[in-house]
Amino acid sequence: MICAYCKSDIDNDSFYCDQCSKELFVCSVCGKPGKGKNCVEDGSPLFSPKQRSSGAAPGIQSPVATPTGTPQSFPAFNQPVAQQPVFQPQTIQQPVIKKPTSRAAAPVPVLRLINNHLKIDIDITDGAVIGRSIGDYVSVFSQFSQVSGRHLQFIFDKNNGWSIKDLGSTNGVAISNQSNWQQVSRLNPNIETPIKDNAFLLIANIEFQMKIIYPPSLIQGTKRI
Image (cartoon, rainbow, N blue to C red; front, side):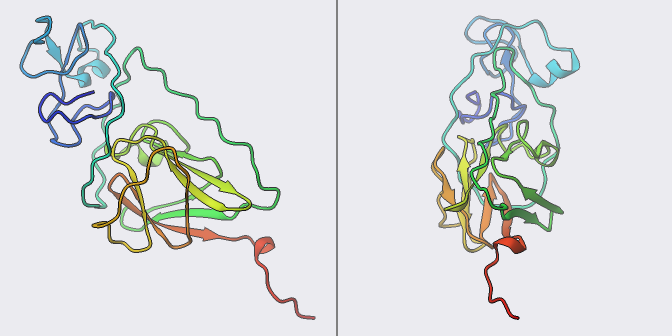
């Protein structure tokens, strides 16, 4: 969806533009966003997607899905955003995420994401997806409007260890050895990037530290008699 105010490409299920913070209004017939009271294309009344979840929206035709936009860069902060109801366009079906078959016969090291300020401490499993409305941790990330509905995936390989893949999110993913994001570029979508222990992860604008915890059976050491 293209914001009618700042022309940013945003998620179709958004109630507010995540770039200019304007409340969004769409045509009740063609589903295109607009400003004012009526659509400039066909003259039909505009309404807020929030009305749809409350039953107050007029009858509409299915909105047209727009491609995912280019990730936008902005400074990281650790404040949660008030949770908004999820508006699901009628013609968009949520994709089914298939977890890859386990490729490690040995025990998998635990990958832990930590944000002490937001009191988030979660263990990641192989193939886990993080998103605002899809994935294994919706209960944690549904409150953050900057996080895409289907944002990123974690993958473990017995030869290469843990890696991360941006699933084409709007606001991107970044990894750094330091908690300084001024010169750090966002990851390219759909490309696996290796993860190191104690590295920092930026999901949209939410920062985490990543810890890799190895079970005793994977730790090689000197055996003493």
